Image 1 (cartoon, rainbow, N blue to C red):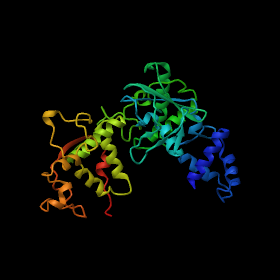
Image 2 (tube, rainbow, N blue to C red):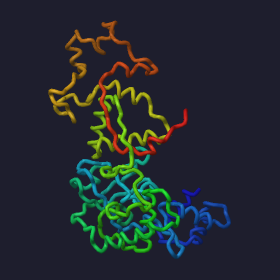
Image 3 (cartoon, one colour):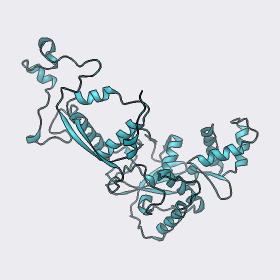
Image 4 (cartoon, rainbow, N blue to C red):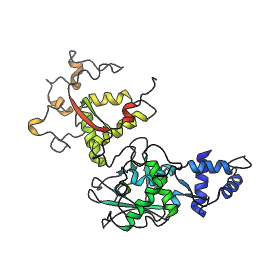
Length: 382
């Protein structure tokens, strides 16, 4: 019921501007969303708890989407964006991320829409070429225009010492130092709430692109921060170092390949995948691990000289023969000769118990800054 109320009230506010709880209550009753004769208290509670709504000083409620129209939020990319369709954002875009999660998708001015992969990788996924082609360390500006999101490169690097930046810093710092209904643990949701309160007080706070909020807010131990920094892992070391022994080479190669495609480091992608596997409702399927052990490394790249992360010639390991090699080499004992070679290894057991013992093709993977929550979480027996 609370979610339906928030969606209904948000649509009203987006169309007509800020509304009082009394005005919203009458329209909620007329729409038949509640049987209560006095829904004002219920509406006020639901909207105060929503990360995409804010109560103005005069008591009216406004929506994040309406307040963000014309506002420029910036993000510094760590990798070149050419060919990328997934963007991993940090707390500097938290208020926009909350709108995206709330609505499910956001239409783009260039066509198509972006969605959030929250629950898997926590990235923003869009159509081909939705991200401007910029080199690493460039700034991108995200701005709502008439209900659609524009993503544009920032051509001139804004200064961290400008009067506009100092005004932003002072306004946000004042809200961050308050104890008025803010989370007592560090969270990017806290920064999202603070950003909306600041825009309610100073609507022109971010009309022009400024440095990203995570670069502006160098505020020590105030109550804000990253739950888990994806785009800014370097220099942020509040996690733990973990070494994974005996990682199948096929799995390690796939991680490197996917990290390269997504524009993140292998360590960052590994942490994201571990987080997703830890928090999702279903346990990882054993067939996923079984496939990782049984697949040969780089099985999708038959040409060893063109595959990504190829071994140097002197370090290259023996690779399993292809089907064509097996056909042309009748003396080789392989999958194609199983019926003619009764002495060959039996197929894997149905329960998978012997799937991994015969492989000696392993690597060691180091993971820096694994979030404590992932290590500490213990799943109930199923």
